[in-house]
Amino acid sequence: MADTINISDIFSYDQNFLEIMQNMLQSALDVSFQGVMITEAEPGYPIIYVNQSLCEMTGYSQEELIGKSPALLQGEKSDPEVLRELKEQLDNGEIFHGKTFNYKKDGSDFVMEWKIVPIHGSEGVISHYLAIQREVQDQELSDGSLDTKLPSA
Image 1 (cartoon, rainbow, N blue to C red):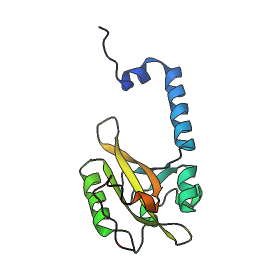
Image 2 (image 1 turned 180 degrees about the vertical axis):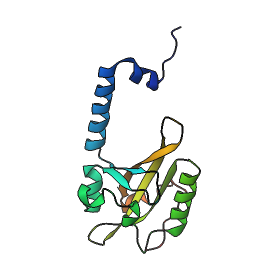
Image 3 (image 1 turned 45 degrees about the horizontal axis):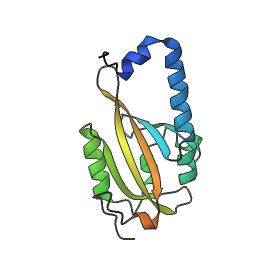
Image 4 (image 1 turned 120 degrees about the horizontal axis):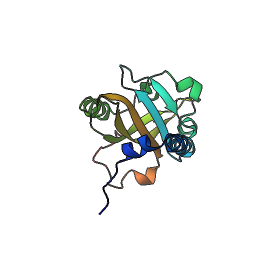
């Protein structure tokens, strides 16, 4: 039976393969149907990347979001309990999955479901967060897929 190879071994195997994988990852993020946001793991979680789907979902351009905090999308109807749970899970290095009301550039609210994954650097310290986000439609709110409840409108 052949030895198993993890993805890190593959990246170090061939410089050309590393470039190919980076290009594939960039393409996957850029054309994803889901909104994608990458932030730094620093106070305020400055945004360093958003894809076009996230821009279309929120009405903000990439230029308007880069360098800002994701809190820009939160407002009056954003559930403080969900945001507390988000902070707690990120502080503990855990994956977060939840949904709450967020706000578009025009001020209109929408329900967003998102998953945030901590990204570790070479020393094992969390350096960034990757968030995959989607707008949830009314018929999806009662699907039972999440324990998180939405605040009443």
